[in-house]
Length: 164
Image 1 (cartoon, rainbow, N blue to C red):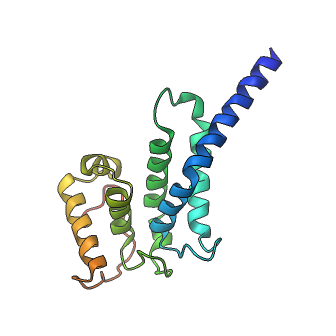
Image 2 (spheres, rainbow, N blue to C red):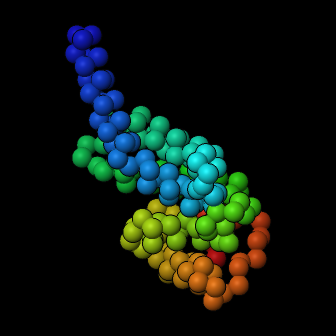
């Protein structure tokens, strides 16, 4: 009985390690974009690494309950909700690629454009309307293109279900 349980645990760990080997690089890049930390030199993104580690830990804890669900989607979803809850920590510019954007703008821009999450799914994940997601995404794109002045930094806003 013990040997069978140990074999299942080993198999579970191997499946998860294979998933992490294939997905961790992209997920770390996603987390780095969200936290607006520089990606180079390696190790310059401790907030992103911490965010990803927590999301991966939760994915591993629920690995047996995925039942055909995509572990990448589950981890990305957890990464996004963790970032949204901790947005107040990510308000200061840190020199990263998207540091001109507010945390909400970064989150929506990364989910929509980098990760390719549909507008409706992004809206549902964040508890916002589709129109709000579209408006924030358009504003973020305009800021990054330089056609709009950088957003005035206000106090941290709630990202999940935030008002305009």
